[in-house]
Image 1 (spheres, helix red, strand yellow):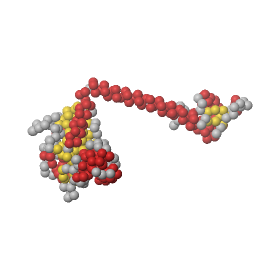
Image 2: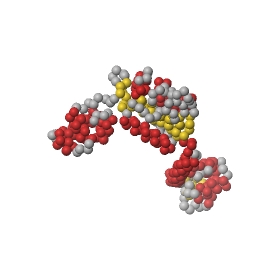
Image 3: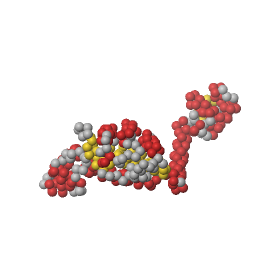
Image 4: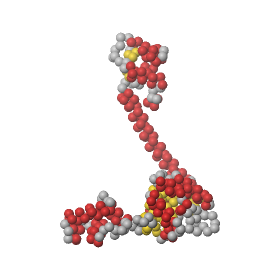
Length: 332
């Protein structure tokens, strides 16, 4: 067990005995551990030279009467562990640097491995299911109308992933939401935690899983021919697709569930009156509280109290969060 700090099995037995016995001579050690005198003496000499044990008395009457005690474990073994940990940390950093260099060189040398072409519907569907089954954190999707591989109502893998805590951010084309059964399907996903938004048109069909791998069909209208898709593993192309998704997400309209359980498009009704909206617009424009108070003919304390009320309605802890919430909910 203590081989990692430089003790072989025999030395570990000797050291443990001395820790328990406090001190012992060669004869005690040999008798207790079942060793011959020569083996016990050799082990003690080696351990003494390495600072693991020390004489119990400074000047023994005779060499045969020398008694030994174990040096405190936290001093002698702890220091060794610390040095080993430092060496391991250094080696780990070197390995990480080498691994990153290897990955970079591999990408440059084997760029074709970053993109794999899936030749037909069967391969595409298998990958759609596999990617979602193995998703750990986040799935991003562009969902367009006229499904070519899997209809959204068939995607049980998403429901399973939502139940285990995977975040889904999905943008739907409005035409798709008009297809039979789609609104109920999306509403069910939203109830399970899906963040859904809508836009009139989307540029491509797309799925990105954990920001590590993406799947994108290569032909806009496959018709009767077999569709093909690109499976993209990392690299600049995937970064571009993620940036594309984020830009469309920012302009898309949130989809919510109304009180009657139906799916509705749009933000929650703004709870602010016209005066509070004007105050909020001045805040978002960066006007200081003192100037806001002057423009509205209010005291600065009243302005701060009304801002606190608006923040409470928005569920915001800071003014920056309030501005972000107002933009997301389109209050202004």
